[in-house]
Amino acid sequence: MTDEEAGRVRDFVGYGRNPPDPKWPGGAHVAVNFVINYEEGGEQAVPDGDAASETGLTEGSTAGVKGRDLGAESMFEYGSRVGFWRLHRMFTKRKLPCTIFAIARALERNPEACAAMREADWDVAGHGYKWEIHGNMAPEYERKQIRLATESITRTIGTRPAGWYSRYAPSMLTRNLLLDNGYEYDSDTYDDELPYWLKVGARRQLIVPYSIVHNDVRFARQGMSSGDEYFTYIKNAVQCVLEEDPPRMLSFGLHNRIIAHPGRALGLAKLLDWIADQPRVWIARRIDIARHWKKVHP
Image (cartoon, rainbow, N blue to C red; front, side):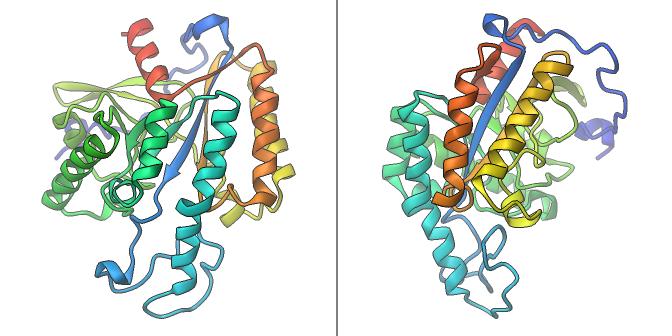
């Protein structure tokens, strides 16, 4: 498959010095999307037949446990047992929308969480059937995993996912498979702060870029240690755009097993309160941003 057919032609120019006016609703200058990555129960685990336990994005990921890592397993379980509900309370108490990047098998294992997502009217995007990197997959296996994820999320949530985000890196085939399965947009890039249309062979796809930089993985990887640091860091991102830039979109990724611990979560609560008081910020679900872009910039 060529780069053109895969929608993977590298572009170092983008919108350049004159990006389009997104015309966000209400005259907002910044569109903010909070994403809760719901992965717990979809990770590699010995009880599910895998050779070893997944330790990615856990507090003990440097520990040298061979085979089944019971500590890592329990850290994932914290995310669905406790962390999700803390984040759910924070957003629903403030009546703020957010998006779920969902591992389908994880949702299958927690029907109560699925019900809470439906009740809150959060949009649920596909994030894989299992928490694995699509960039490593053989074509037919990837085709099967995307189909399984789409069917499973449709069952557990009641509506089919409209968007998709792969774990870190997609394959050359991912975008074509998503178009084949009727996805309205994907977020498998980190290259911009506005949505854009991309030619994929004879078709085109709407891209709603994501961010690892503005993501709570900094607690696990880059040495962020407190909720106050998180509050200041993300607040600065919003203020930068408000004061310096043309209108933008900012994505803030959250994980149930990372930021939802109390010593970190209070910083998120403070941030939600601060952002809600900013009249030029539109807090939106990802599907709302995608459909706004399709309407205003078709």
